[in-house]
Length: 401
Ligand code: NAD
Image (cartoon, rainbow, N blue to C red; front, side):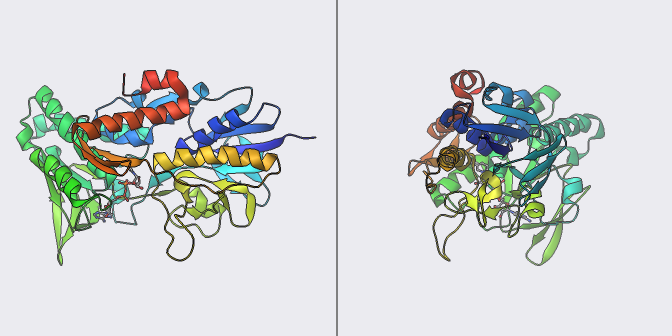
């Protein structure tokens, strides 16, 4: 009798949640669990805009994966996955090859610039703690540089995309920048923050009243919105945008792209039928033709129903953790020769923060805004640490205490 090998790729919300739940469900003699992740730490992907705006430090949003891994049950390998061989049942990594009986692919998201000219070269993104910190450091450097250069572009920030990430980042900026300006002796009124959004309105999943509240909140603090305006390129001077039929140059030395994400590029290289790094999964979270390979988190398109009208759920930390939870149970069923069950998403709501003291959202189906939304956001942020890391980590890393 040989123990089955379960290999989990990625220690984000989805992968780590799978491991935590497998550790709960399985005894140490039941299976060999191997977790492979690029870094020795897990990061709170939903806090990256805070690192990028300087509201929190790099280390506040990360914790060592070893704190969550039970060494009796799980082997944790720090390595980058370079190839998945679905038919050979092997995974190639920078630390060698691993064979699996069951594979959990939870490789997470990357930035997507849609091939826009100059975007990768001239704009910054916040898709991991390293580039989020770089965005913060270059902003600070430009503000400092203004003191000697007098160049208005140094104090000008353009943000591409008014999705959740863009809006939450702007909410942090209008809180942290007045402080930074005060420290450097710069008049905050000289700072120009422009957010460019291709769609005629932002955050279409929220009722108009909430969207208007968020827009006014940010406008009152100096943000200028250009809605219905698409970014067409990035260059060393700023972004070019399309206003009607005309191209216009926006000038800024701080260029931020928060207008697109996709699943890991390894997905296209490893599987068929992958779109923007996401593959459609079956209700039991396995993929077509491979009942031993499960895909969850930002690399999975989890459908909200069946038939031609079915749409994938938005990729969020909330759904990623629920997917990991469900998969932990389904893999146990698999090992026991039982039938797998279908994943059912329990949408508890969404909050879009506007800095640390304000926000908008839908919580348990009800619209919320202001201080209460900000409070709920702290509850959500702390809960996600608790769900993966337990009480001690929630106490040290959470935002409630
Ligand atoms: P997004 O794709 O949701 O939003 C990107 C925005 O950029 C869109 O409004 C789009 O119209 C705009 N855009 C795209 N191309 C453009 C162009 N060329 N010019 C101007 N605007 C352009 O991306 P996101 O905000 O990073 O969110 C990614 C995922 O993460 C989503 O599923 C979201 O729900 C989730 N998320 C959730 C939260 C939360 O719950 N608080 C926070 C952050 C992200």
